[in-house]
Amino acid sequence: MDFKLWLEASGDQPTADFGFDKEEVANPHSIASIEREHPIHRFDIEEMGTYLAMRKLGGFLPCKVQYVNQYVWGENVGAVRIRINTGLQLLVDRKGVDLLGNERWLAKKSFQINREGYGGYEDVVAGEIFEVVKEVHSLPLDVPAEDWPNLERTVVNLANKLQRTAKEILVFENITKINSSRYIIVFGVRGHGVAAQDHRRVEQNITEVIFDEHSGALRIFNTNVESDVGGRHGWELMPNDQDFFFFHTQDNEEISEVVSTPMKFY
Image (tube, rainbow, N blue to C red; front, side):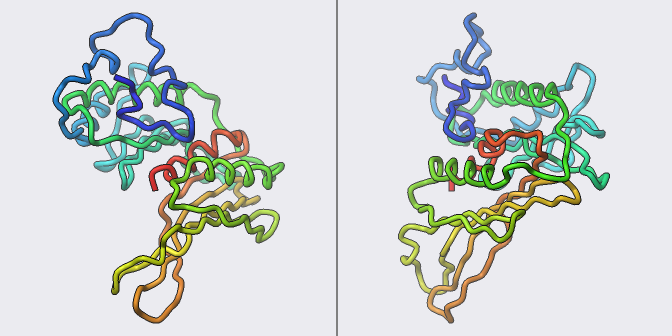
């Protein structure tokens, strides 16, 4: 069975890009060995977490379960964290230090967990996820800088990626440049006018990109602009749905892959 039945890879590329489907030798414990004919059972995220918590990074670095949805390997710079957010989105972060000396979790990978799958193989899926953890841990550390060359190109690249991956309900409207360090990518919502009384209606979905030269960190967050239905008309900016940090050593492709995954499953 293809691993993408369990995790939807970020962006347009299948999970095979990370090597999950490249085994040439048959392995009875691998995802590919699970028969499609087996009865479908609901996938248990909590059970998968228990298997993740058993894994040691490098054979010696134990996992610390900070919350029911967070798993961390290491404490210092270079530590790796997994978060499972609302909507069963899985994020892999790595700890870095900004120009002000503050520790920051930098987004490195993003996946969508498919909970409606073949229950009973949570240990196999945990193993596949841990392979991503090991890959991220093996990468060179990302470092900040006082400027972000070609930030506008980064924003345009991200907007193009969001257009390709977003669900059809979201319609690209524009990119607004606030200043040289701040941009807003705006999507309208198709069919947003249909809503019941006393409910809220999504008017726009916005992705804001902000570079802070003092910390050297690029912050990208996504949120909705909503209005009340049947009441006094007024638009309200809602709390952030997604919030990511990046350093300039992370290329545009990595950034756009991470940010675009939630839009694919909006």
